[in-house]
Image 1 (cartoon, rainbow, N blue to C red):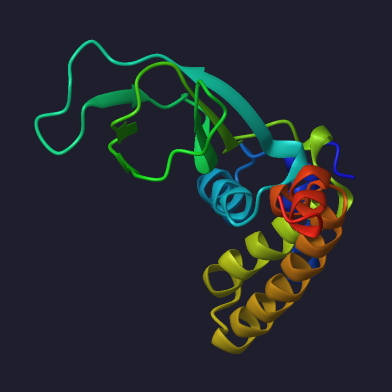
Image 2: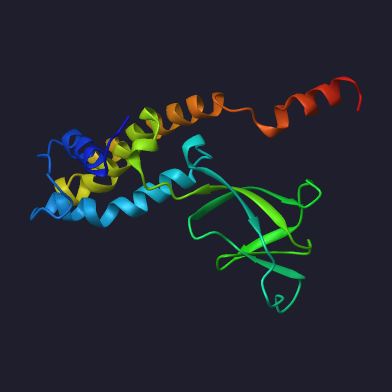
Length: 193
């Protein structure tokens, strides 16, 4: 498990054969690149899977004004929103028709609506060890060419990232019960209900 952004960045840099940094503000090319690329890399990896450590829930109230056309209601997404996992109405039923535009959900469901979503988790202490490894690997893949000038190294790092991401997703997914396999669903199907 990573304890800091610096640790994740240093793991990426060490994988590239670079020297470790003390802070993102260090006066080095590596530190500057880590500082610049880290937020986008973090968000991309978090968005790639519904990580248990980055899941959130929210109740959304309808906005004051209705959308211009097609939909009846607009709901502003949380500021830490990265990816929607589920959208349900007050009755607990999934909402089938909706879309996201510019930070709002548009749909025809009356308020309130509820979302399960992947949120921007910024505290590395909450990351699973395999997620931290995947983050380091993606950062290494992102930094490989700017630091080394080698496309071969960048491609190798990208392959390593994909492998680590696959492993992390698999373990993370086994630590939760997907909705499609919840006891009520499979039991109902087995009993014909």
